Structures are given as C-alpha cells and as structure tokens.
Image (cartoon, rainbow, N blue to C red; front, side, top):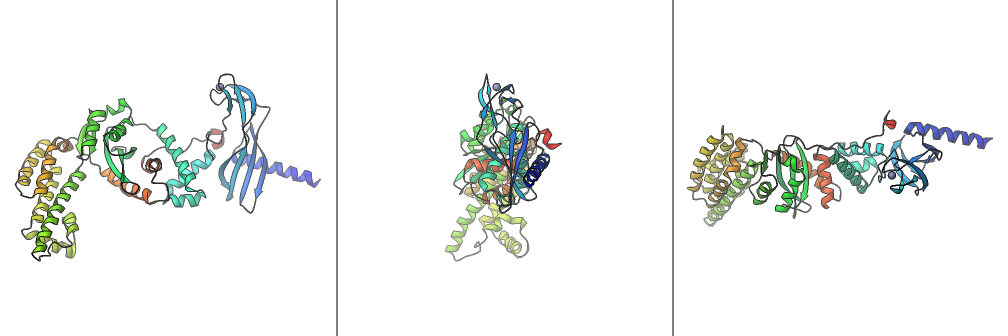
Length: 423
Ligand SMILES: [Zn+2]
C-alpha cells in the first residue's frame, strides 16, 4: 500500500517537473531524484518508444536503431537546486544518412547545457563585472564559461549582418604578456568590433579585411588606420575602393613622441650644466593645456623660456588646428604652412615626423571627406583591458577573440528557445 502511494507520489512529482520544464511528448520525465546534501535534483527523461524518430540530417521518419549512451545536461536551477537532465537519446537508421542520434529539443547537438541554461548564462556573463564573478554566480569553472561564450559568439556571427558596413577602422592591440599583437576591425557606424586576428603584419591585415565578404568589402567607403605600411597596403589590396583615412590619435601620438625625444635630449644637455628645469616634466608636455593648479603654473613658466622642448610642443599644439579646418582645401593650405615651419624648426625629431605626415598627406586630408577616427577602438580599450585582466585563459588567442567579440561585437548571442518550451 505504502509502496503504491510512493509510486503514485513519484509519478506526480515527475509529471510536475515535466510541466515545469515544458517537457512534452515524445519525451517524458520518468524519474526525479533529489540529492539534498548536494542540493541537486536529477531528472531522468525517456523517449516514448511507440513514437517515430527522425533523422537529424533530413528530418525523415526512420527506423529506430538503438540508444546512444546516457548523457546529461545542466538545466536552470529549480528552487536553488542544481538541476540535471539525464537521457539516453534514440538513434535512428536513415537510408540516406546512416545511423544518427536524433536531435533533442532542449539542447544544441554537443552542448552540455540546456538551451534555457545557456540563454541564462549568456545574460549572467554579460551582466557580470568579471568572468570570475560570472563563474561564481553560475557555479561553473572558467572552461565551461568560455565554452558557453564561444558557442554564443559562433551563433552570433552566423546571424550577424555586415551589409550596412561602410566605414571601418583597422587597429592593433597588444595581447597576452604584451609581446604579441592582434589586429582588430571595427565598424564605426555600428559601434562594434567585427573581427580579431592574430598578428599585425600584412597577411594578418589582409585576413582581417577578408572577414567581410567580397561584395561587402567593395561597398566600404573609408577605413581609418595608423600611418604604418601594413594596414594601408592590405587596404589597397583587399578593399581598393575604400579611402584610407589616417587616424588623428596616431598622428598626435607621433607628435607627442617627437616632443619627448626633444625633451630627453635637451634635459641631458641641461643637466650637464647643472640645470634641472626639465626634471620630472615628461607628463607635463603630454598633458600641456589640460594641466591645472601648481603644475600648470610651472608648465607655463617653462614655456616662457626659450627651450627647444617648448618650441617642439608648440608645433604639436598648432597641429591640433589642422583637424578643425573647414574643408580639404583649407586643410591643405594649413598643412603647407605648418610643414614649412616644422621643417625650419631645427628640431630633428619634429622634422622627421613632419616628413612622415607629408608622405601620408592624402590619408590625412581624407579626414575632411570622412571625419572619422579610431576613437571607437580607443573606447573599447577599457573593456578589453578588463577582459585581459580577468580570469584565466586570455593568453590563448582563440579565447581572447571570443571574449572581445562577446563583449564588443554587439552580437545576438542567445540560443533560440524551442517554441513549445517558451509558451
Ligand atoms: Zn537522413
């Protein structure tokens, strides 16, 4: 009698879980096993042997062959209990495709988690401050989290459209311990990272471009980049119709480096005469007009002396106005004047940068047709810094790429939930 009651209660609990999880014919919850000490509930599912099975490749109704070994999937927690689904999936025999395991409605073919769990995990990872926090919340190790992210990115890339991409940015980032580099392709208008490839040489840059289909590459109007040879050569090769726009942040960086070279040399000469005026001023010259308070006063006193460093700095500051010119003709006139002054400056590092800029003048003037910069990539820096600082595994390129595309790719990441489970 008691045994019958037990069996009836078991059946009721199984039916209840079936409803809760949306399990429907031909699947059925056979058994529910609670493990209180582990805070875990395991559901054994079975496929109704009277109902037909379909080939996973062509959906044709086929003969049953046998069952695959038992597998398990982690599902959403129920009342804070880790919930595991176990099942032996029938295998069918298709005249065309041979023996195959039928698809289950709750998971993707090789996933270890149900679609619901993956959808939830994607949200948790997206909302977490760090991968470590996501691992804690999901009670998963970082390998599993990385696996969920990789699948999500794959899904997102399949669904992504790049039809509208017209203005892109090419940029490099250091990666791992800082010895290796990756190249990034960004979409200025969509404000997203499109692709990441290892390296920063010409083949890498070509590969980066080739992540866009031929027909779409031909519609890209402009690409921002530094003044190095590789990105420009790759653009001429892979997207010859795109205008090359040299990025103003890179120009400013080159000019900043020239000022610093002048400062270091002058500092050395002043020290020989016992003059310590330039000691500790490296960052003053980088920040310049942005300084406040005491450093600002000290800086303007420095500027009033006839220092080479102050002259180099003035040339750099003047160049900022280049970007504010109303059109290309005005930009060209401004540049000619700035260039003459810089070449007469007798400051070798500055004269050298002036020549580099002149060699890249077309790409600089293209800014007046396409006023875009790699500021977007710079904006991703803090996000990417956080990705690098976080958890383990970022030194492997594939993991790094997955994380950048997961957080900066604006991809549609969640799995499609089967209609009967979402009612
Ligand atoms: Zn088939």
